[in-house]
Length: 340
Image (cartoon, rainbow, N blue to C red; front, top):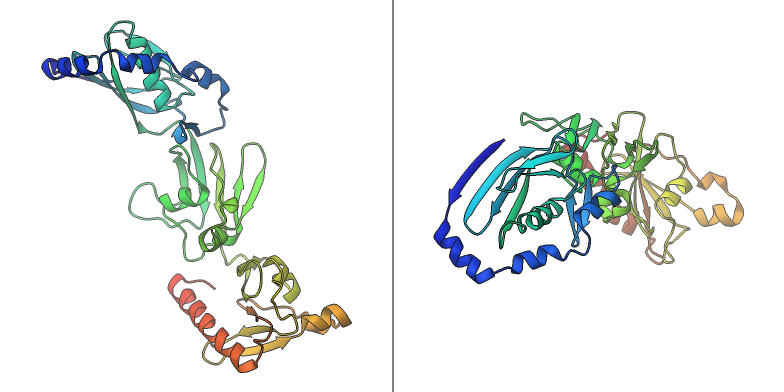
């Protein structure tokens, strides 16, 4: 424990005459007491909401820096939470407080309340310097670096962190990372499969849950037999579709949210190969549906681009003109990020 004292009597005497006991009144009238907060929070949570803001839940081994102004002097101490979840606060009142399960705001209010038994007014600040009580694991295709805290490892959770925030903070994705198949194994036994590319490109936060203490976050490799398909045009969820199996055209369009009402189902195009001279195949899914022509439901190849035009926009040269820039963009992405 590190303890420092700095007397600033004159300045604080002026301030106390201004504030009076208003701080104490605020501290003594809490909607939920810190003790009640401790009892209602789950031990599996890394954060709690306090006045609409997510805050870290204090636990064993966390390092706290506490500053107290009692109207006469400023005192500060750096204390580590003990194994029994308590800390010793040596600010004149000699408090031994149970802090496990509290937020920093809860602890601030608790110290204020106790201090007001001895002082007319107090101002308290609580800063968490080390987050050690809640940890999660990060494995797989995570980029390492020279800096500490990057790459595969076990890391502390700093309050509320989503999966994407957790991965980016600790190095981000490697060139071979399969962002569409990220997996979380939870302490409860639940397993989540997430498509983080939908978070990045479509803003789908349903694919970006909060990391819980004890979670194992695994980022798989694109090289583990994964096929990637790119779907554009008149589908409800355009973007990248990944599968360990070879998918048919209908399966890929289904995974991309199926057709929009304006889609030309009779003119679906598959493009592959050289972006400057792509091989373009036209398929008629309308005849597949109406005439059971299963030859139109082609099995796709890795990195195929599927384009569904709008009705009335189905001239071959127009489609090629629309697809070519997409193929060029994908080629540049593959070159820059090493995707295969």
